[in-house]
Image (cartoon, rainbow, N blue to C red):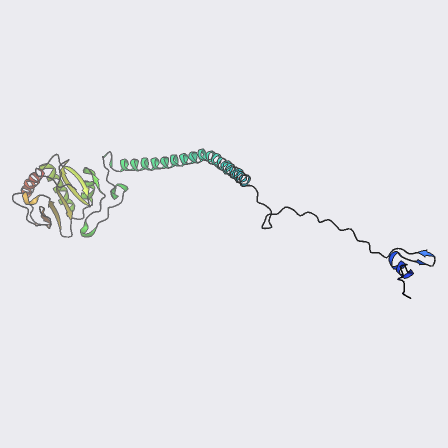
Length: 271
């Protein structure tokens, strides 16, 4: 006889499907309960490359402009402070410089006054006083050949200081030469230059000078080649001629007077 399919639920099946009864109690279902899924937290919006989007260009430009203005304002404030400090220092600096200049001028004025007073006390009221050693009470130094060292100066005083310092027999000869020149040219202008007496016409130059050497006195006629007759001694310069005066030798005073007078009428030598 054909077997009938069993459609009933077996205890095992029922226990598997809906649970069973154990020790008089119904057990719970073994069915798996699904855990609730967590919804994902939305992530920040990012650009295609995975980076945050850049700020708008207009906003960045405005920020740079504001920073530039602030920097410029700071620099202007610093410059303004420095300018005020410099302006405050300038009056004090100028005042100090003015005081220093005034002090220097006062010192220079005192020195000038002292020099002028010393010059007047030494040689009187000459326009160009000679700074002769004899003015200080000291004997002038005799240079090579016994020639006196007399400082440069205009007028008769330095010439007389030179003659007074000429050694030995030369002093008397110097006095005589000076007197003869003044006799021949009463308006002769005198000076001492390069430790030698000079004679000339004021504004016209020099026509004669003399100088001491060991054995003689040398007289220089600066236009001697134009004199008649010419003085006897030649010179390395084109127009100068010399006359040597020795001790204990004759001296032609008349000829010397004629030469001095002729020389004074010729163009003088400017030195």
